[in-house]
Length: 192
Length: 187
Image (cartoon, rainbow over all chains, first blue to last red; front, side):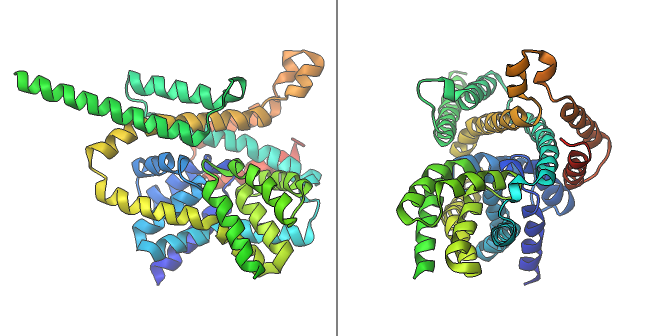
């Protein structure tokens, strides 16, 4: 029971600070879950992020389900995800009940203009931390650039591919290339 | 019965919103036309609110619509409706991953998934930077490069970047400090 409460409470705290669509979360998740609690590693978090891109739901929510499952099975997954959702649900209900023009308040706009700057820096940190281990050779560098251009500037192209399609195609390309390499080195081994 | 309907409608939205919060928008517009639980203007407001609170637009919209139609239970139930497909699918993948983690096929797929994933994160960063660090309307009005960049925002960003490297503070502290700086210096 304690373990579930611990999961719930940890993700309540994380849910309070998920600004910027979850991508800025990586440095926070890394600190809270990998450095402080040793519940996961940066490598695992990176893979959860990759999977989160092509499954429904917000990435940070997917990560909470993954970590919860790892720590405490289905009950753990529910505890972690519920924790993650708690703060946003409470905040929106308070806003819906009392602050109809919340987003128009000058003080809110200034605060969030400041937070957006921080989110930018956190995203840069996330990319720098993930770069090593993800972009490891020519193929992965080309794939990185290609997906970046298609995703960031897709609206200038005749067809904008949805993010999930890009991610699935990349997974398929990675699989094809690594299988081909394996087949080749297998043959090379036989020739010797 | 309204609670069941809320779960059903938002679970459907949750199932098809792959790739993050904004993917829910087309479904929310459709739901607005169909159910009348919230208006198109409510959706626009909620985008603004979502940008200024933690939590994604889809979750926020479900909380808002649920709360408006059925009070606090409605807000909670609708949000879990939205989250449900994501939880179920992630659980299935987690089970699968634990079993096949070391398989060559999974490793091969990740070889391609990882660079794609950080490419998406980079693109998301550019989208935030477009709002946070540059002022495109001011640049279009004056044509001066000095107006393109929001210099105080860039200065704050540089300070945070250096601060994070030098100090071992939690990122949360930097988020709170940025909010304070934003208010103090009228960002």
